[in-house]
Image 1: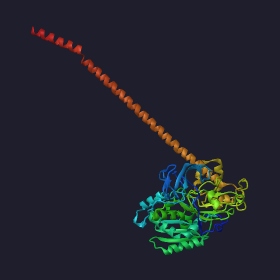
Image 2 (image 1 turned 60 degrees about the vertical axis):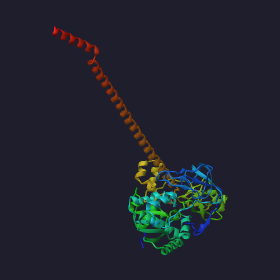
Image 3 (image 1 turned 90 degrees about the vertical axis):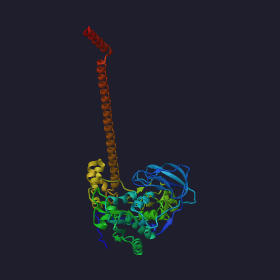
Length: 512
């Protein structure tokens, strides 16, 4: 057994996980329409390859990835494309984005799916291609395209694959449920991932508040043979132990340096849902079109875990879960710590939607007004990334980009632990998100400026070269004209005739 380590900081908020009855899944009925955003992942939005009015089958690709960091979008069922237009999407900004609207026909016809009987007979590159074509992105919340993450093994040898079943955020039980109902799929998906990256061991990470999930995974490991060392590791419950860097420290004792990636330590982390999606893509040839979503909160009559087609409007989910709007204080996409408020319930479920939370006012009282910082230091004690939240707060308010970057703002995982313990009720994470936004905008503006400068300099160089070329041509023409004038002067016919006449006269005089 491996030694379990502790992480700095962290908190223990009320879990409230039993509310959604983990370990049981309800199949969500097909909604009357599906809204499929073109960007359900980190990176560039996909590009539509279908037209309005077109009939499509389940599993058919509707939009293809653009560039390396992007992901395909597929139809969760058969039906007709009703529109390709802007629509509200799950994002903290509350803005709209381009989406494909699909009207299901109720027949659920699918493309013929072709999987791989034995993934070990394929090459890692072929498996990565299958994962990319299936449109899989991280399902733990970040949404980074899985194929790109797996390509890290091309640059750095990978020793350890970590399957993250921690699910440390309160209320959410989607991964807990998946580990209980489909442990074999997680194991097989992990084997495929380990084969791709060349990992020598697989660690299945589960907090000790999920004993049924840990037992199910352990039994699945016992029931299957493998050439790779495997272990189910449980450790004390603490938020946010599910953060990638925090989990690596818990399991290995190693800290991922600022600005580095887990792959630099020979480690790759994947979520349990991602592992199952990989298994479905490789073995069954099935793209990512459904996921388990936790619907919870005491404003719901039927909180539970639902298997949901991607693109399902959240207002439809709320209706089948018995949503009591008059009892709800707000709607949250994600968990209470890292989620964001939903302004428009028409937004759809996407690949990163693990929870929809409908709490009452008693569960989530309205936030009191923020007070002045009293410099108590509780935020620094709670920060799992060993940052200085108070300093980052002041620099964010001052928009001091240099100091924010010097204090490693981008190491902040936005877990909300600092805001949770703040006695002044300062919304610290909102300041950090805003600061990251304007720094990113500044970086992009700098890149655009540098590209513009490079284009200007290239144009100036081209103009100068063309001017030099024209000057050279003029000089050549002038020289040619001067040479011709000299030649013409030397070969003047009149002068030549006079010279011949003089020569003949001279000859006659000599003869006489």
